[in-house]
Image 1 (tube, helix red, strand yellow):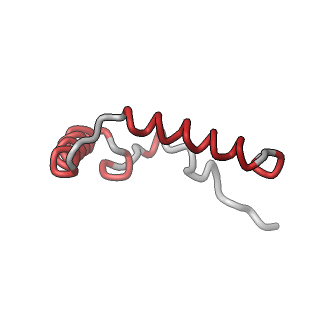
Image 2 (cartoon, rainbow, N blue to C red):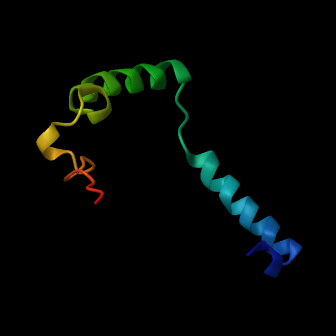
Length: 69
């Protein structure tokens, strides 16, 4: 995409992106990390990697054995 653009167009695109980023509110990592940890802890009860998948609902369970004759 950038190959087809002139230097002025690339600079305008970068300037537009920077203007969008400046408008974003920033949060301290200490606040964000606490929120993320709390969210992970509340969701862990439903996480199949932690809780496991019941055998009857496991889509990857072998349907039957391989028979070689």
